[in-house]
Length: 284
Image (cartoon, rainbow, N blue to C red; front, side, top):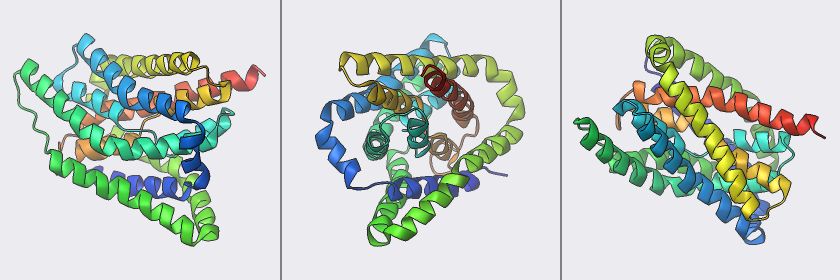
């Protein structure tokens, strides 16, 4: 069973959900909080892929996992980050803004970063990893931008129905992702167990380093604690469904192994960020 045919509908549903959460407040936030938006985008678009690349190089990861770690770092958090921001007492409107902007911006930055990474890995590993940039861009537009736009238009035309649909999708989003992780684990149990040491440490280090760096970035910007928490969550949470869709797509990499870092990242990410949220809950 190829999990790609399961992950694609899940990814489309998640992006449609994000679209239904977009409102005027999300767009006004860009003007109202330019510093927070710029710092959040810097952490998401620049810092996270850079940290992932350095970690993959330092850990001397095999080519396919090197690519997989950088790939998950290039995929911005979906609607789950908005829920986590709410639980952490963060700025939910800002979270929606950052998620939407990063989802659009990474349509273009992801192919560029992955093209550089594939050339670097191919040169150093003595193998050839080709990246069909045109097909990658097209798939991202179809799976990310189109459902995001459709959700936004649906909210604008049918706000009441969009609210009901959004609540229903929110309830099934997390279980659907966990089901995907379980099915993927069943399919690649041996590879995950054998390589968990290096990929687990690398993914865990990436999450912690990205949260720390984004927190420092927000503190340097003298942002409020609620905004800092929002940026930390936005940078730390990544869209595993998107990474799996790219890695496993028969039109792009067609590699289930390349998606293994995304699955491990997703599992560790939820645990670490839940602990991060609980820290604030019990420190009040």
